[in-house]
Amino acid sequence: MPIINIVALAISLCAISEVSMGSIDTTYIRPPAVAGSFYPGSPSDLAKMLAEFFHAAPKPQLAGKPLAIVAPHAGYIYSGAIAAKAYKILEGEDYNTVIVVSPSHNEYFRGVSVFGGKAYSTPLGEISIDQELSQKIAEPGGHIAFSDQGHLRSASRSEHALEVQLPFLQTTLRKFKLVALVMGDQDFTTCRALGQAIAKAIGTRDDVLIVASSDLSHFHEHNIAVKLDSVIVEDIESYNFQQLSIDLESQKTEACGGGPIIAAMVAAQILGADSAKVTGLGDSSEATGDRASVVGYLSAVIYKGSNEKLYEIVEEEKAPETEPKHTGAADFGLDSQGRKMLLSIARESIKTRLEGKELVFPDTMPDALKLPLGAFVTLQEAGELRGCIGTFHPNS
Image (tube, one colour):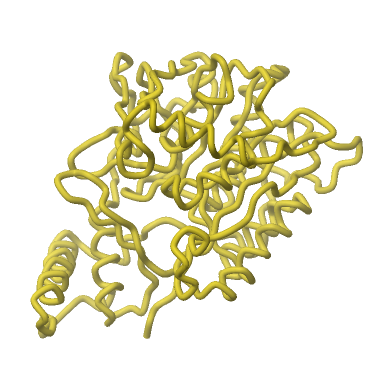
């Protein structure tokens, strides 16, 4: 079994959470977790970088007011310029609330976690939570509920995908409140339910923006990444979120935040959107020069462009025939002892590689540890994110 697979599988499995979702401290202010790594920690340096992005970005020309935005969440030096090509449309617009939907990279949990604290904070200041709208989206006892999962800044895990969107919003919008959502499950049923819940909560309001946070394909050669990413471009611009779900499940395309994109498209369509325009597309090679292994990025704007709907929303009881069964980390049938063994192997694999030695696997292992699987590794030091790497496909 390739070392990267066993390490990533260990990290993924150890992050699975079965705890029930409950409310968190309503006075809690979530501090920035990746300031100084994903983006500048200094307010002045951050403002300067954002100003440069927006100065270089052309303003998209749309027929109507944006209802949703799709933006990448990598380090700003890699994807910031692409994100700005969507956020540029917000200049001169007024939104009183922004709903940001993010995937969870560091822990798996059932359903969708709604932040119930007081505010999110970045070097540019605090953003108050729209408690009223958050409560309308949350389902008491349901799969969309108040929880600290995916939100808390802690020594062991801190999600970045939601946080990195906020400075862009703080720069383009004068004053707004936030609804912060992190998806643990990204199956089609959850995406659809979340989209419907968001649309129902917004109702007739025209001052709410939805932001879906996602990167695209991970660690393929440039030409392969271009082919994979072209599929999601087609699905978004044809406004076919069902096909997007199918393409993600069949691995015709890749997006770590595919669920947030689908949920945003569902919600926006209910609210009247019928058009989507990709405003930026690229990959990490534009910053690194390395085309052998790249991460893809996309930005897009979803809006009401005509009176004719391009795609009808799926009825509640009907889902794609190839609906994803599970797109987060799975338990693979491992009990607590199996997970402990996996974590031990993962740690040993890192140690032996650094020491130039060969990893020796235990004589006996659960069958689940012998499965050929894709991998995604998140490395942290003293609770701080130091890097991410992985692949959606097994190496052997």
